[in-house]
Length: 267
Image (cartoon, rainbow, N blue to C red):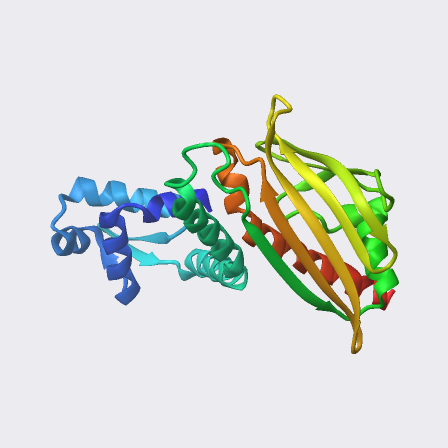
C-alpha cells in the first residue's frame, strides 16, 4: 500500500495513469502527451510498475504500457472504509470542536483565580431502570468505574462511599498523563439522593477547582429520572480546560451510564 500511495503522490505519474486508463500507450506517446522527456517518462513508468500499477509489454522495438486497476480498487476500498468509519464517528469530532469552542469562549475570563466560582450546571436523564440499579452504578466502585470517564480515558481509581463523610475519589489516565480528583460525601439517602464534593488536583496536588455535586433519583414512568446539579468553586486560572470540558464531558459520561444501565437490564 505504501508503494502505491507513494507512486500516486506525483502529479506526472497520476497523469500517466489517467492516460493509460483510456488505453495502452507506448513510452513515446506518453512522453508526448505529458510534455515530459522520454527518460523521465520511463522513470515514472518504472515507479508505477514497481507499485504494481502498470504492466509493460515489449512488442518488438516498442514497449507498450497498460494500467492495472486491481491495486487501485484495493486502495479505493480501503479509502471508502476509512471515510465510512469517519462519518459513522463524526460525533466524536463534534465533541472536540465543542470543547475547543468552550475553551475559546472562556479564555478571556480565565485570567484570575475565582473566575468561574458560582457557575452551575444541570444534567437530566431518564434511565430505563429501577432506582436501586442506578444507585448501585454510582456507589459500587466497579460499576462506577465502568462509565465514569469520557471514552478516551481509563479509570484507575474510583470510589464514592455512600455515607456521610465517605471518600470520593476519581482518578483516570490517558496517554498524556494522570488526572485525580478527591473529596467527601456529605449525604447519601439510598436510593434517592447523593451529595458530594470533588476537587480536581493538578500535578502538584493543588486544587484547580472544586465541584459540588447533588444527585437526585426519582421514580419515573418506566424507570428513573436522574437529575445532577453541579456547582463550581475555588477555581484557579489554570482550571480553564477542566471547566470548559464539563458540559461536553458530563454529557459523554451520562451516555456511558445509560449504556451501562441498559446492559445491566439486559443481563
